[in-house]
Image 1 (cartoon, rainbow, N blue to C red):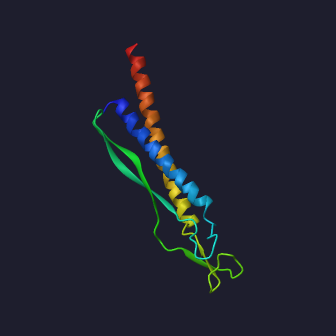
Image 2 (spheres, rainbow, N blue to C red):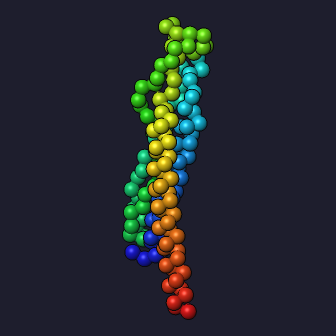
Image 3 (tube, one colour):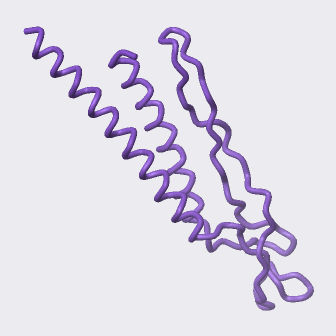
Length: 135
């Protein structure tokens, strides 16, 4: 694998992890949301999928962010009979976002991003050193 290919692979990983971090940030921003009206649904957690993409020109597999899907887990319930979105029993639906899970996912995405950044920087330095040797 040449250095340009290594840099392209690392760059695809950076892009995929940055999309993942953006979706996680959106989930965290909406973790306290509830339904607006009775019977309405609150914010539903989003998940990023990754796809394997073949770059035929370079002959390598790259990672790309796939579709953003919705987490189909159940919403929570909170007793708040005075809320406009409360059902007949006095419960409102709360989002299915768990802040701890999102924090863990964000930490993992940051580590993956940093690893790809380190690989990209190493490839860049190796290319620079190779050019210096050729002078």
